[in-house]
Image (cartoon, rainbow, N blue to C red; front, side, top):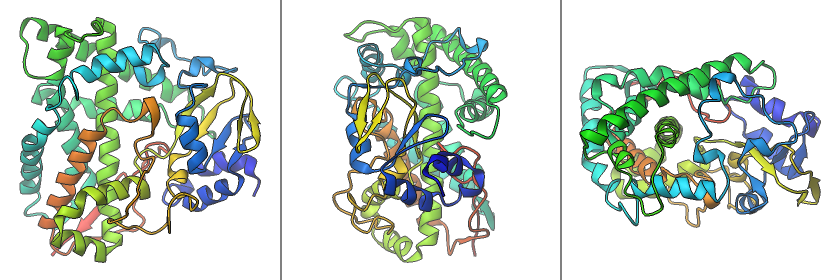
Length: 403
């Protein structure tokens, strides 16, 4: 088929369970112009170079034909993930001051015990079940509980975040066959509601601080300045969505991959110390974020011999780059002991995933606990039903039976 229809075929739900043959087709072209004027990039070295190229913008407002925004979203500025330096660097730095090294090096490590306790609680609740939905019973509640507790969201309010989160994620689904207006409006409303809630909670933390990130944001002790109330809202929403949705997919895709490779599951059961490398391989082999659909050249650039004009939508297919045989040996083989695994699972460059250390820790603890506690697990359906989004790709349900 024509290269000009690749994005339409990749985003077609019929290919959600296995988009990898289409990624292989894309790599034959390296970069492919689409019917709508966008450009797909599918090879590892080109994607890596573009992620480090200062001429590539993450701000969709630089597009020649800008995306139509919903009026409900105008009150909220873009989060730092959708901005360029120097503003991106400022906001990311202020958020990182409360999250990781060098200023708060122990926050993620300190979550190890809490994550382990949450995992044990979830597994205890599954003890008498013969059939388990890995998504609803385990992979969803774990990261949403972790990120809510990290931010300081009261336990009784945690269920509200699923409805908001689902609406926000649906809004970024780049399905060329559907009118995005309704989804984008619902996503904007959900984002605003979540932002107002988190902003109000941060205000309470100013007078009654606790050992959580919202308290740290409200205190504003970053060396580079202080987040405004509006910036606290947008940053908190970003952390909750990014810290939750991708980890759900990482855990679920991990369980599915291990059940499809029982020899490797048995290997990890007897050698749990191998799990950190296995998680890196899962991030390469079945990445939770398949593509970055919102990149824009600030000037005409050449990619693999093709000129991509200034302002054209540029879509970086991370999952395709992760299976590029020019970069990875035997790329379609799942190898939990793979060496030289510089995957694109968390992106690269200045916009690399902010929450990668936490996602890694959650996945390692969760997968080790699952494979040690589930006896003879079996898939009831393969492939399972997938979520609609081609960007955040993962099963919507993953039913497993056990003895």
